[in-house]
Image (cartoon, rainbow, N blue to C red; front, side, top):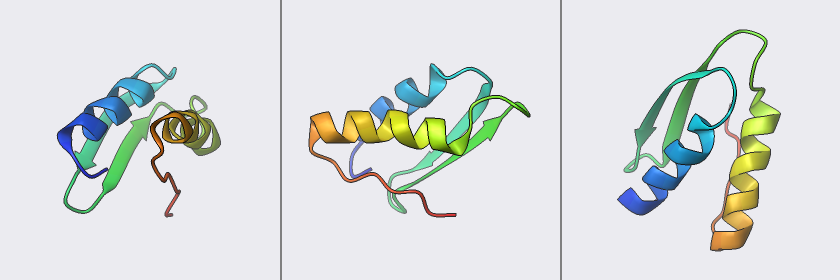
Length: 65
């Protein structure tokens, strides 16, 4: 995430996934923390959704555990 537009897109994409309870973003650190209901949206599903957007928007998306 490099701008508020990307931040909004990330929140919108992740917010559509089942079980996502809270999304905390930090544009300066280019990070996102997601609270998910146990047994719901996996990190793989979240990453796949963001990578799909990233490919269309020519943005890099990576998982940093």
